[in-house]
Length: 243
Image (cartoon, rainbow, N blue to C red; front, side, top):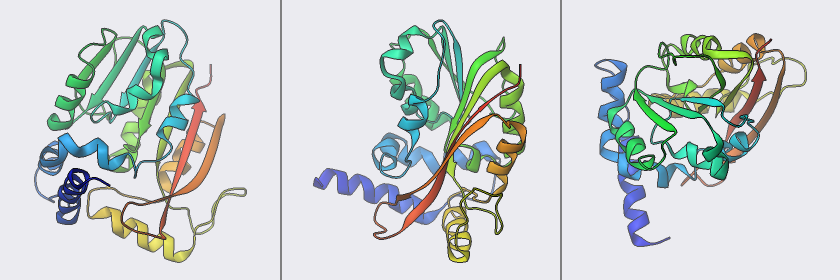
């Protein structure tokens, strides 16, 4: 790895070690945490946030369709659509952190069908129902995650799709057919991520499965930068709204 990359990683790691402040509103906490690392945000997280490309590759948007990403951050995930993005009628990127929104605006400046919004994923709504909503490593960072999921479902057309990829840990006794993580994993990973405002448990996945019974689910683990031998659990979920 180049020296410049190591220096960049070191700056991000310092921010992670300091953690997210516990004071102020959610937007203020996000801005304080991410503003110093916004320009280096994507380079480090390419090796941490697994499954995004695979999720987006599996999401269908009809020609002229309308998609929304909640918790879009820097807009990096929109690039995973590749050439398909040109066929969208519109893609709305929504995030609450001004520093990350600034990066998203720069990244998508030449894309006329992409709109960037500084807004709360729990209550922002498009002007019409949409074909697709997706969240990539965002649900675990939203304090009122239940409101964010319900808001996503409200904006979907009947038959629309919700896609989610995120970290999680299983319940002690998960539903039949689902992965059961060890007691050590269920204790270690929530404590590890909580310091940075990321909250892992089984409830998010349980809610998604309950609200969208017609779904596909993949559970896996992935390596974590600078923690050799450790693998963090994550899931990919694609559910279809009745209609």
